[in-house]
Image 1 (cartoon, rainbow, N blue to C red):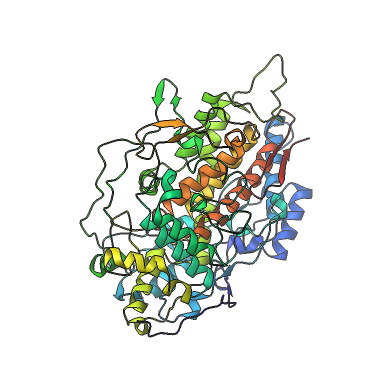
Image 2: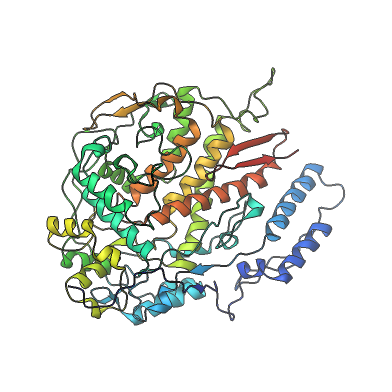
Length: 589
């Protein structure tokens, strides 16, 4: 069944990505040069900007201090803005390291190419790919209009990769290194696992198990034979990155969870995802419209190939007429199929209000006897900041997705797997690790569907943008960081609940850890519920897409908060617990 060589060890070869060719001057490249740092340092002393933004059609004129006699607030605002920009420009640009697959496989079968014209199963038309690569390299809108597509489905906003934010670090300032300027000691955007690596194979095995458990209630995992089998196989895989118990085992109740602090405490579903609340005078039950069970897509080569070309198959999701609480993988996938960017975190803010959760102890109004927060440190500030940071998060992750990594989607890897398992592996250059080729999950999926393709809950499969990092994960990491900044993360959530196994109602959660369910842990869990709902439950992202994306989102939020702290009149020092368990502090004192 396997006629092409497999690789059973992690591939060490990686490639440092140069964001733009040398012939195309870049504002982002400027930020990483010694000349850029020198210009920024001069700005700090002179409060003036040199004309350093030099990309085609763009030139920043020299900025000077407002003339004497102008309003002093205008002058102070000017100095704050220039000072923040200067501090950001002094942050060095880290390495941007890819997994090497684009250069490793000449036919690009290990690289994202969905929506481009395809020559055959797993093989993009190389001329079409070259038009795609030319546009990404040049950044010219006219080149994007020359990309050769395979159908009517368009690429999902690739020019967003070139957008600049006016607060916090630019996307180019995050990469394969920690970010000490943003209080991050962990590597934020390492290269994703190579297609043929053991780590990638393990992630694909997890995706196949998750697809087979899509309609099983999370609360039933402990007694579900498929979940028990999944836990056993993943326990045996050294490169599995999900949580394990104290014996090093993956138990059924730990399946498809995140590993950040608090995520293995309590039910699988975050309390912020299921606690009823209100949006002003509108009641929100938090029940969902999900999709009918046992209807999956892209399990035959015909529709799979149409989707890779961007051709509409004519198939559509079928809604379940009964609303339910989020209780299984299909429900989470359905939620994220149509959610509004930062919806889950805005609702979490509403739930925090409903619960009466206390503000972060560092909030300057906590002990005030004469004032309360409103447009600063109050409800309007929190609500509006969530939308603002979510938009910035997309800018940052789009740069990484399109300009640096181009990681293929799991559905494409499933296509390679099918080719190898059916004796057609030599038709593509890419291959997969033996751990997935011999997986029990893959065999169980074949027994169910008759092919080795990875089943999908959406007829169109993934969106038409690369997998790594994931937008849902970066937005999640950024938004929960803001909520930790504003609220007391140690607050224990009272009277936790869990959905029944049909999702029709809720019952009290009575587990022995019920008294350990706190705000920070449930926020971490919420971000993974949403990003894994879109990812491994939706079959369209890898585990590592989410895990590193949440860290990237957190770093961006800290970057923005450090800038914004200087704009507040109130003097404050706010601390909160990061995803790595360490403390971040934001202060203007």
